[in-house]
Image 1 (cartoon, rainbow, N blue to C red):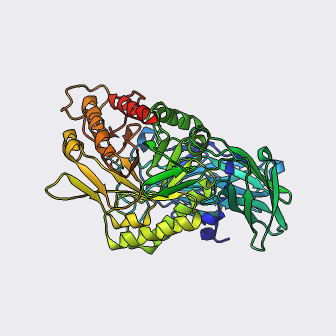
Image 2 (tube, helix red, strand yellow):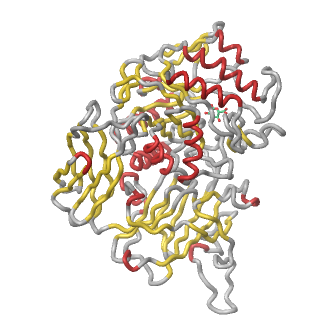
Image 3 (cartoon, rainbow, N blue to C red):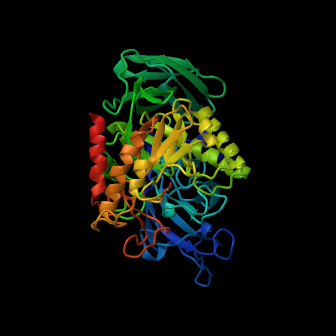
Length: 582
Ligand code: GCB
């Protein structure tokens, strides 16, 4: 089996939550491999050998090693791993239930940051690069009776040619940060499917079903019981079927009515079910249209972190807590910054009616000229899209954040925009850009050539924080040189919760509130302004922010502190969005 092929995005198993599975979450043994020798040196950890006699020399032992919880980053689980960047070997032993043994079996990892090498029963299965997207590896025919051994080497060292690159303004949490599943499937199974309203149509769905297996049935059946629909579609000899289906009487999904339909797809003996919402999405000039109606995005940015507990967020409970804050703010939109977030939050947004922006960590200093980096970016993008392609909540795929304007970057990002559209033409493509100043005036223009490739222009802007004092908002104006909608994808200021003073004093809640008060009227003057997302919902950990007594390792631009306390600015944003609802 070719490992590169196995980790290819197109081969991802979709609707993973509804497949027959055994969770491999729980306590995993771990061995720190500080000099990265566990795969080849005198300490071949991957072999998980046991001493055969008392004179045997073995210089490691998983059995005697401590444990980490999976899912979970290592940094927040053990003080001595807090700053660790390197390789850690993880091991889980498990038995395979009798009823699964005759099926095709896959290991499915929701995410591992950053690089993973997977060994099963002492054989290397494959590798995966990219810390925030899922991948799966087949283990059919490799089972042992009794205990099976799954060993994963996780390496979170930063690299210039990785995605993201060396420097980010967030914590580089390492580990098996999301669920691990053993998935049992039929010999021919439905690997993935796309089923959404066709671009430009209010009630006609189109898409595809992709089968995997040697014996292909002649057709697949798609059923939506609530609409009384059941239809068959022909399977071609590559195992793909095209779906075209009218949905009469459809209630379209929207934040006000997040209606999801049960959809079942059958292929021979195999079937898969999902809950799917259907909505249209388009732009017309400066307008952003959901189900044909202009909309304004009342958003907020969120890092995938449970600051209150410490560490990466991953669970349904985490998602409820943080989308709960967003709801309280009167949001209808969340920018999931700066990388693909876990599937739980995306599915909850589908249920709760919150629109989402999904993003790839093409952030700051990427090696744009490197073809392998482009391949890596395309694969990670494919993995995110293949996981989320049926989620009505997701409306935007963002291809980068604050990237310097060079020719190689423009070429790379044009290739990314084309790639996204080739995988999914039902959503909008955006990117967080930065403005240009016109010297001697308060005017700033958004003229980045990348704007040509985007459906929605997005701008990170910090007047009042990095750029002058909040008063500057009164005399500053933005002009968007594209006839397209604009989202302010970041704005805000830092404040330490509970630190009070006059509004001129940096880091006070009053200063932060002042920035928001001044920002909204300025943003309202921009003709294309169709939404905004304050930076950021909750204070988050980052090694870039070390100011003692104020930051202490936290970016303080949260509207909510790391202990869940709401700052003054929270209520200003909440009130602005309440008025926007009227
Ligand atoms: C930005 C970045 C974001 C940072 C933020 C800040 O422009 O996109 O990742 O955390 O500014 O706080 O400066």
